[in-house]
Amino acid sequence: MISFGTSEQMNCKPESIQSINAHIRFLAERIGPRGTGTHEEILAADYVADCLTKWGIPFERLSCRTIVSMNHYPISINMMGLLAFIVYPIDGGLWRWLAALLACLVAPFLALTVRTSGNPLRFILPKVTSPSVLGVIEPLGEVQHQVVLISHLDTNKCRLTWKPERLHRLEPLTYATIAVQAVFGILYLVGAILGQRWNIWFLSLLPGSYLLGIVITLLVDDRTPYSPGANDNASAVGVSLAIAQDLSQNALPNTRIWLAFTGAEETDHYGLRSVLAAHPHDLRQAVFIDLEGVGSGDLVYVTRHGIGLHYFPDAGLLQLARRVAEEQPDLPGRRIRGEKMIMSEEVSTLTHLGYRAVCIAGHDSFTRGLSKWHQADDTFENLDPAVLLRAKDYTCALLNAIDQGER
Image (cartoon, rainbow, N blue to C red; front, side, top):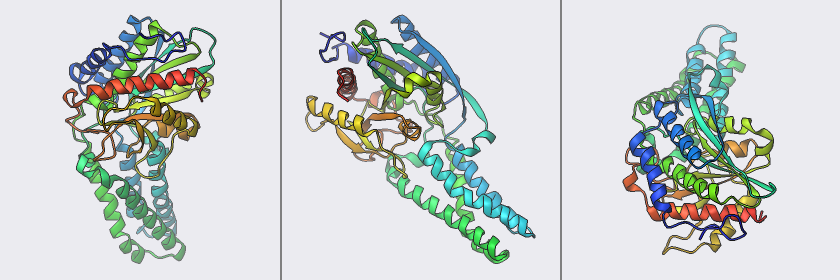
């Protein structure tokens, strides 16, 4: 029996898997692919809002303006480099200095995007409107702790460069690209200082061709269809909704639970930023638990994130996640553990902005990323009910540990 209103630990109801499955099926099959800024993403937000309304959970609808595709940042950055390539050979020292300035910004701008999912070029890029839903469940007593449970609504495209057999190349490719861009900028800077024109330009043909190849590859990549997103991230939304339904009947004694169903996670995390802006004082004091792809693979707490230029969860939350995991019953060969993962999600923005966050995810041992990540076969049939239930149980255990002051 569940008793959220006491110090007893939260446990999963036997009917939890039916509830979670129903949510995932509605999102991934009835609605289908939910690209950022699309009508389907709005339908997903409507579905979440309807569920919260049915359970009597107060919520607010939020929206943000976001870029259309995750590829638009690297495309625009590399096109800035190609503009430098065109400008540099124009006669006149001013043009060479302008080209050097543009070229020197390419590598830092890409590094910033990789680390934070943002970029100064954002203002020139086309935008769409993306919805988010923020619910709140008050504790039975005085608010002593605040936790934000995050799961995103949108899905990404079926990225050609993210196929499982290629995923291990993403990190070295990221570092190689930044290195080539840095050499490109240094080359033009040296040329501007020395007053060299054609010799430097001819030397820049190789890195310039590399930048052009990246742009062409990303443009082709953007023509792929959207993924159904059963694991990434209908699984997390389903688990969050199941927890919300239970908490609506049995609130925690001391912890306010925020339920953040965010849009724009697959682009630049401005759905999350709209949530942070809506309640800046309360959420600055909160801790964040991000659920990502919790329907397949081995359930883990992520100890290192990133596709190069790594970032890390809050040390205190990581220690708590480790302790709570040690207390969970083991499945044969599938103990909850910490893992470094090739992934980029909203914890990157949270840690960059100084918030305390940790991520719970499904770890694919072959790719070291999420199972079926950004692929057409990310469907309901490829999910594991045991992992979904475990994700709910483990998340509940974390919430109880925080509620009991174990931070």
